[in-house]
Length: 163
Image (tube, rainbow, N blue to C red):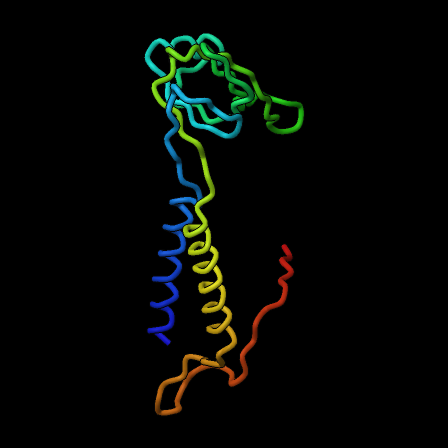
């Protein structure tokens, strides 16, 4: 029983680490090539940081957003900016026109199938181990048959909390 609990902890930690790493990779894009619209990460120069701070009200060195169009001299990106709303937080989007001189590098965000498969497989393994432990019928009794709880295995389907 201790071994199964230790194994499930190891699998849970490995799954958590892979989920933190994310299921996406960032692929560099050359600035001098044609840039197709899509989700990109834009790294800014110091001048770009100052220019964006005037518009967004905060200093950011990296922008994550949707590039809507590009010209020979500009990159137009749609970035999220949040603002207060009557009931909760409302996400608003703002379109920024960045001169190419203000951009140091671009990266395209792409789904990594291997990481995604490992994350899903790890989550399924953790779920399977937890279900196995819950339904295995081990009640905590000692090997000589003494002590322990009831002989049946009970799994709560739902709980009602009352005060």
